[in-house]
Image 1 (cartoon, helix red, strand yellow):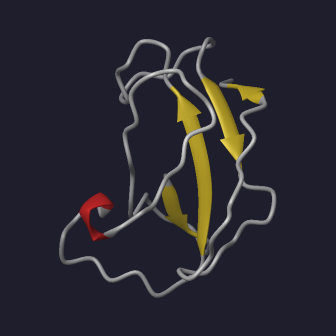
Image 2: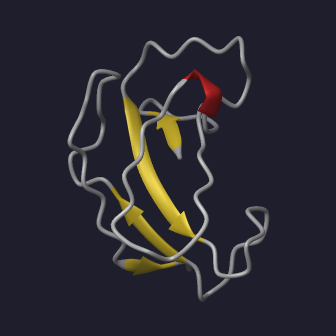
Amino acid sequence: MAKPAPGGPPVAVQKLVGNDYPYTFHLTSQDLMTPESMVDVPLNLTVRVDKDGDAFTKGPRDLIGTYEKNPISLEASDIIITINETFQ
């Protein structure tokens, strides 16, 4: 999930299925929440492993990771996010 660093709702999300880690990901215009969105601000990246597969529910078994070097620019690459927290 990518949210503007200044705050606000997600501007891009990506759903990956399976449990073979690590995942390689590339956020593109296909991942934008609204197709007409223009993203020109730094972004904060987070990952959530949703145990029940429903992105609208959040439970104590869900796992979360936040990129340690947030915020990032749109040109960022070689990003590694460690999933090391449980949802609270």
